[in-house]
Image (cartoon, rainbow, N blue to C red):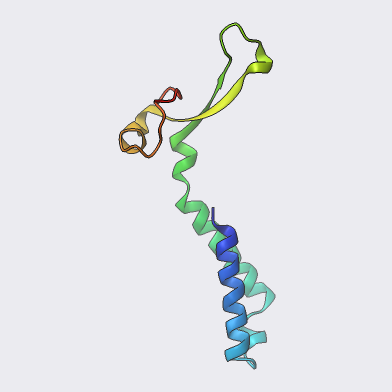
Amino acid sequence: MQVSSWTLILLTSERLISVWMPFKCKELCSRRRIVIAWTVICLLLFGSHMDFFFAYGLRVFVPEGGNITDAYVICYVLEQFDPFFVESGAFPFESNGAPL
């Protein structure tokens, strides 16, 4: 979700403020403000990736003649989202989870 990238940007911004405004750094970069900024970043990233929770599903496959220990789980696009993912070539699987 790119949280590590945005955390690095937040840390770099704090370093920039401490170099350019050393006397205001304690006020601008308090622990409370940094926690609030990091929380807002995480919530925005979570919100921007929310469609993945609704567009994808998991399916368990057991090979024919195999037992449950041979089973594997695959990720697939739900049928109502086929026009957005499968037909555009963004996700190389059919809606039932089988590879194209």
